[in-house]
Length: 178
Picture: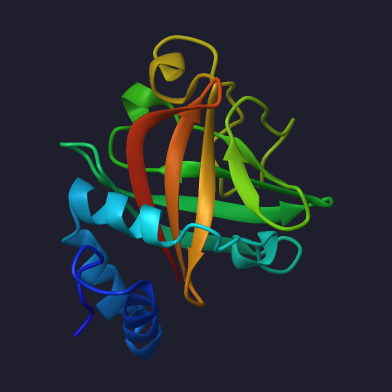
């Protein structure tokens, strides 16, 4: 059993996540609400998320199952690919017909990484939706000016928090790599 982040040390959560299958970890993650995501974010401080945790080989699309702290439409995927030396991605979710795909580039300082919605790639693989910036309506309401900071939680899990103008928005999410 994977313990709740609010009730267990981070080492116990990480060990349990790593011991379970990907599907078991995703099922557990789907049951987490904001309180647990915040606890996981706080307890993961100092756990850098290297870019290798997000990407695969050149051209390989990696799917990260996601759960966010929003009250509705909180299940999603981040699909990420290494192309031409850059790591890019988008949000694959049921409401993208309204919100847009939320294209992003993955940035890194060499130690940790983040999703940067303020810049997008100039083109996308055929499997991605067409490139669209995040500064038009209604995309701007969801993705405009946003940076998702990341922390690692074991071998295939990440916890993230959204920021605008370097200020936390109060929104959190977790990702499990497929």
